[in-house]
Length: 535
Image 1 (cartoon, rainbow, N blue to C red):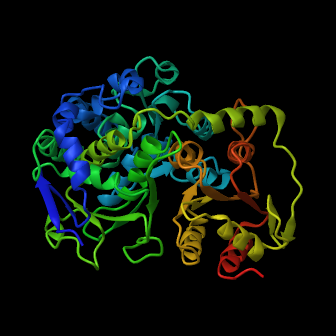
Image 2 (spheres, rainbow, N blue to C red):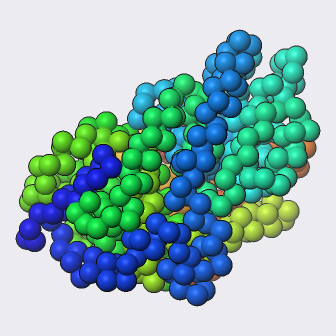
Image 3 (cartoon, rainbow, N blue to C red):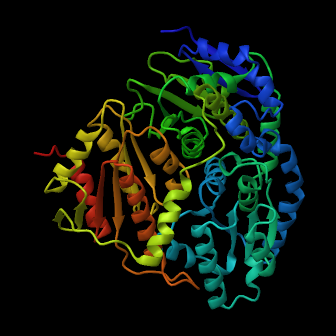
């Protein structure tokens, strides 16, 4: 085992026992930390320079975000005076994951809608409508899920007879986007985000801070934490924790992320989209896996870098021993955001990947649009077991189908479960990741659709071409209309799932589709079958 090394600064510490010496030497010999701190857009090669030149605003965006503080403070007070205190966030990917982490970590209520599941949406629409403000968050202003949710909320407020529908909306978007114009027209409060920051690097911009602030978080503290950590960006080791983390991330093909119990909650979901979408392209990349605990199946295995995150820096001083993760990242949340962003940029340099583009994200979106126009293609089930129908395999029953998928995972492969369901009421399905990871040594990931399409979906299509996929969809008891559109949310959800199946099949990826006609019974059957060895 390599000697334990801890780099610390700006209130955060990274500790590791992994040998990252050659990678660190490469980064330091080429003066990468100082060049990144100076926003050098050429660090990732000539092909990436044009994109990087307009995507490096995250290096100091937290300072520009200070201008938001009086705006959101005044807005929250105005909403409270009007009796509006419940905050709902309608956004996808980078527009929703950071505020969710912030509010979970600080135990502040925030309803996040990053779904097209009609049952989950209906439940949100029926809760405290008169006391609700909806933050509609989209960088491009044209995200289909977010726009569909906006329409549903407008209809709900209108039907309830509220005096001013626009007062119940806050729009966060880039300058000049269609959503800026739409928000102004509907009388919403419009807050413009930093246009030089990509969605997955936007935690410390308006996308991350406005919903959290309206929900009651003191976001100035997050900004201060990031500002303190920013002092380490150009520093030499051992006072540059981010460069040590970046070198470690690039050292292995898979990173398993877990919490250490010292105060950070849900950061793995945010880091997952940052790493997967930034590095999963050109047939390579670092596969992030969010695991339930440091001892969960898949947390440690050959080729896996185990990383724990926490809020107490004192915890990191214990170092990385044999019974500890390979890397510990400990410090306050604002510093964590900036550290992981920097580390991902360093990893992109080491892997010769452009960390700012997402060349394959639009594919499933385009497929969805075509399917919404033409209808979901019909398929014949290979087997039907009560509430579960199976497609795309040779096996004649559910346990054998799951075993067939597990057997399809190669030595350098991974298995992904993609669940297009209600991530609140159907949350127990997430146990499937652990059950399957107990049966194979390869990494097993779990994602809720369409949420993952805006994060790990890039890796599935553009990253290492070794993935094996299990997609789970479910029929809905009732649909919910998308106002002004010829389809409902159930139809949109089905089209998104079908579009993703098409994108993966076009690449020849092994894929088992499980369709549940009854959600509760179907989930029971799937979880039970995952524990069985097929014949």
